Image (cartoon, rainbow, N blue to C red):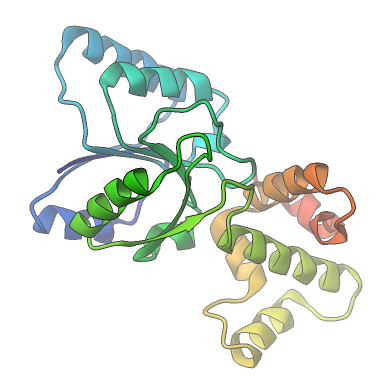
Amino acid sequence: MLIWIWGTQFPSAKMEAWMQEGHQVVHCAYQEIESDIDYLQSVIISKEIQAPDLVLVTDWEDSPCQSQRCEALRSLGASKVLFHAVAQPFPSDTNPGWAAWNAWPDGLELDCWEIAIPASIDSEAIRNEWRTLAAELQRELVFCPNRAGMVTPRVLACIINEAYLTRDQDIATAEDIDLGMRFGTNYPRGPFEWCRRIGAHRVVYALDAWAAEQPEQDAYRVAEGLRREASLHK
């Protein structure tokens, strides 16, 4: 299988494992997305590259060039594409083999992927195609409704937001909250550590999108400390 990874950092151990299993992996880690799209379109025109069996777009919702990237992938003939999209539902007018997935760092490292297929193209046949492809990569799939946040990002973002609110209210320090969550609830890492790993700007972007969708939900109202953190580390 020819796999393209288009976007930001991807766990090297995962790529190496796939290559050891006989797959070809190409990681297109861009510097400027506009330049990458121009390059991709030029090689498509010259027919210098083979259409990939799977494309993993790890930062689709972080990019201002979403429609251009989709058009480039259509021109390439990429039939199976997973786009990182947790803040907003994935567009319903998409290709039958395209879907959303959770590409936050923890999601990339797991052997179980959360994906969301728009209802307009969802079917058991489409799901079986994804299951077959995932099995070749030794991955399991969880099919989520095509709603913003899926499962893990929504829960995790709310935990992080509540931790910042707790610190903002001088109830505990960030260090104590991280320790308490790791040893008190057996989480693999504390919420502040998780936030640094994901990127505060990503967490805030998602929470703001969910708050706009459900303004009655206080859980999505961004803590002041978290918003400040996001503004400093974009």
